[in-house]
Image 1 (spheres, rainbow, N blue to C red):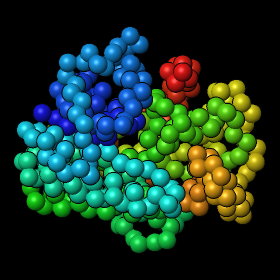
Image 2: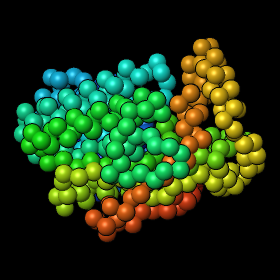
Image 3: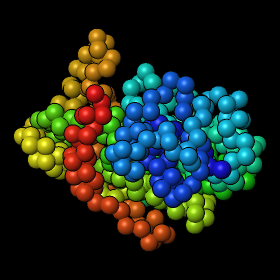
Length: 341
């Protein structure tokens, strides 16, 4: 039996659908108040517009929370393989403790109960953030050493600590595979996480920065995770980045495809510092406002490069082009808008 945590989230949904496509039977985590809307949208991408996930015989939804030990003890009973995708992503200082509880403590709980229940394989979704933040322009890979730095976001710290829990599990007997994906994009709900960049471009984005980041398609991440487990590639971590792309190039491409004016206003360091303070004040009156924070403003200016040659060699794997993924997102945007209604 296979278990997937975070199954109602963007990447978790892609992992679940990949496993179902491969004929696997699995249990998928769902919290009591979780919505299945995004999952259903992604499920139809894999199985067709008329497909209904409720009729999927190989998918068993279970109510569980990675910080609820009794629920973990129940759902991990008789399980051989865990795909741990559950995480909280935020760049708000007010949610730093929440991320530590979900990402670090929650992962420790998953590892501990997996060991108790004799789970054999633990495939964990970490992040390039767990590699740490180097000076702008540096290239990072699996050998990059974590350095305590004020440049590390609270999210990065929580994912680094979570990864340490997984390595501890490996020392205690789990067969572990860890992936460190870049910013994960692909067909999903364009209002959340990295996909909010797609939604912003659809509305029109007048600003750009010269920052660079690594991007990867969710389907590629799911494929790599599946193959690492099936081919028993354990005891390693792998950076998953298709391409390193500048923010300007990303928004130029999306703006053109959506028929919007190209971004014209370059965001300098000074403008970024003013902007995050302005939106911090706005959030006092509208907590759901633009998620521009001190961390996101500063990181948007950083040029971060990542090398994925290890996984390419290990699995003879070729990533989908970021531009192909972005085109798929643009093409599916009308379906996303209909699905939200």
